[in-house]
Length: 242
Ligand SMILES: Nc1ncnc2c1ncn2[C@@H]1O[C@H](COP(=O)(O)OP(=O)(O)OP(=O)(O)O)[C@@H](O)[C@H]1O
Ligand SMILES: [Mg+2]
Image (cartoon, rainbow, N blue to C red; front, side, top):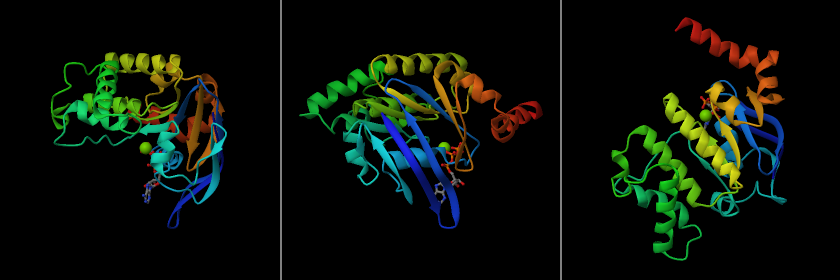
């Protein structure tokens, strides 16, 4: 579905990604893990065309996309949710969701119908006419997902949608993401909640200081010495000290 070759990104003198290579097949749920600052969100921004890589190729469904504008990439069926969730203030919840559907809908009425369906999907029925800026963080995250779904993605990149959720909310989000896959949406998921990720993903990629240091099954990657040293060890150490 997507193949990434030789992606590199520098911000001034800071190298954030170096020679990143991977592929994701249609129907997979792939986790992307790594310590803070590893370059995960930057990689998502590059895949969506929001920022340009300094080098490398991205092939999505057989077509090169690294030169395309973000709205063209989104139209082609690739979109993401943002780690920093923002809503359009002064607009209702359904208006915030239907913005995604305006990309392809023939009318605002059709976009609104898709917005309402997406809100139902993510568990926001009943909040449609509230001001989006009044929503709690958890619901803003759901809204972020609804807006992304309204663009009708075939590949959806999910950037930390479970941060701050309680155990029941995490389970509900896992079920929702699995149901999206069952409907034919391929997913790449950035997540620091390793237990959730192990339940969700077919495969995991581990990024550290801009390079993929391990990939494979969730169990295999979580036992990889480099991953334990660079990421999991740090997390366990933090857990022990807290
Ligand atoms: N626009 C930018 N200009 C300069 N540096 C940036 C920019 N965006 C990101 N960086 C830097 O690139 C590095 C990677 O950031 P990125 O947000 O991709 O990390 P991440 O893996 O998503 O981390 P986290 O788990 O904390 O979300 C960090 O050192 C960050 O400070
Ligand atoms: Mg990030």
